Length: 136
Image (cartoon, rainbow, N blue to C red; front, side):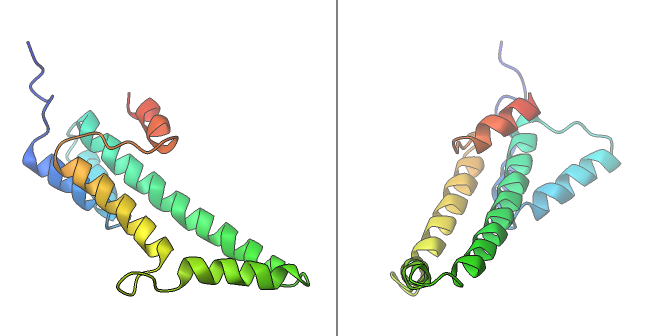
């Protein structure tokens, strides 16, 4: 016999889907509301809420580390020009005004949100494994 919560409800799928483009804000609010109302969140909702928050924090942390390192490298002669060219290539408009980095970030958001909307556990290596161990 199947568990009644095996297939997520529409509201759970919507929350899980919308938590990715909002950088985990909707997921964070949903977790807080669950704590206030003392309701138990399903594994599906917890997984996507925690994963979106973790991905957002990871993105912000990587962004700060990258630009901090870039600021340091710009003071090194001969290397600063090469690094500036690489950064320019990844940030210049390529497709409809979007850079390679923007396309990559939006693709991950669409993949994760789309998977959540259809009721699947979207998978990103390393990130998903960590969140799965937390949720279970």
